[in-house]
Figure 1 (cartoon, rainbow, N blue to C red):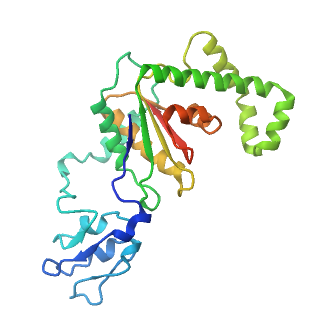
Figure 2 (cartoon, rainbow, N blue to C red):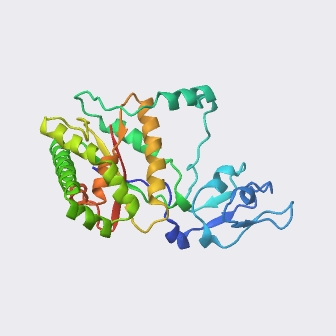
Figure 3 (cartoon, rainbow, N blue to C red):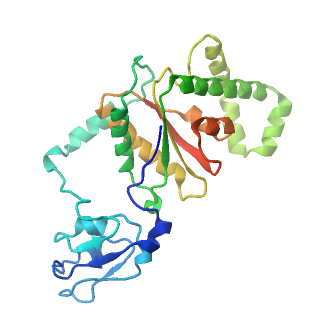
Length: 285
């Protein structure tokens, strides 16, 4: 199944946003002015209610609504009840946070049990809270749990890397690569030649060196022309790994899959990803 998780409206649609200050509730504290990164709020005097200027610049981060102690900021994207109070007793200590970070490891040994959809959605809820460049929140996710589709994914990966291993042994193909790819890409491929050979050999022996039998794969993709799509996906999936750890799940980031998706459109077809999108991250659980 697939989810498009955006906790805000994209920036380019902000022309329809409506923001007003409820002057009857406003205490003139200036919290909205101080927290707005886009400088939408202007307070002429300390004892006056702020004014709203240039609403079209709003990135729907929600800081103004969350920070206002009196609930005086009324934002069309955040109706009443959008923000609830935090529960301080649930916040972990610095030692607990560090222990979680220390406990998170890349796990490649899995039980032959499916991950319940409700658990996957908890992981994706953690993904939804991740920051993104300009708060676009445009990264989308495909969750693959079908045994048939996971087998197809393995076959595509095995074929891609077996073919790459063969190509890198051919001096003519290597020369062609140097004309088509950057020096960094070519040097990286040459350094990994022995790894590709090892992957092909493991597949011949009946092993799965790509997914390691994981029953669930989450693929993050986005439009190619967004600001910092790689960083957006990386931060979001790091959130996912931490939530997975807290939920007792093992997992690892699928670098081989991301690299292959950038070179072979068969993967995009398998995941039903639009041609204008690119895969920027993947996680096995």
